[in-house]
Length: 196
Image 1 (cartoon, rainbow, N blue to C red):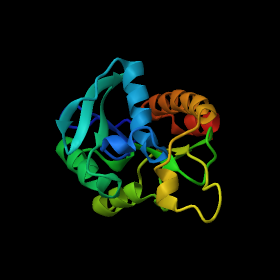
Image 2 (cartoon, rainbow, N blue to C red):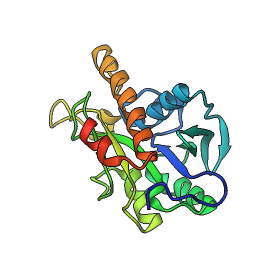
Image 3 (tube, rainbow, N blue to C red):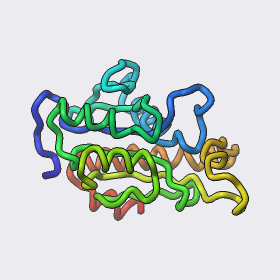
Image 4 (cartoon, helix red, strand yellow):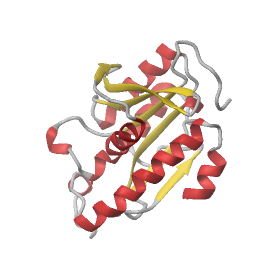
């Protein structure tokens, strides 16, 4: 199924999960958006058009046409944007790569999965629920656990990274971009071996 050519030109969606308001910029929960911005920069692509309730930009990754997406539906409704684009381009879940934050991984760690549950991430939960499938390749970027049990989870995921964490993130985004390129080429096993 990987690398299957799809109707409508675009063969892959690369979706970064996040929240659209200014106050969410550069917060832990917006790692997915930040990773897509990094990838767009690397590919010389602008993610600025509005389509599918998202900021989008079309680019080439290897020999494939990909649509980079930053849904503006707010995290918990990410599935609305993703499923709309999937239906438009007639894409199977295997051709939709989702990048998002994970509190169970330390900052500087990344995990790639071929499919699976939402792991408590509400954006992923919305995508799985509305598409009826969990077969989405995903790149999870570590944002670290709450510093203490009495921290409110919402406050934690909406906090900003420290300077030191920022340096580690840069490396993570570099790795995430490389992983996405491998997944698009149909080499997800290689990506998992290198970056998990």
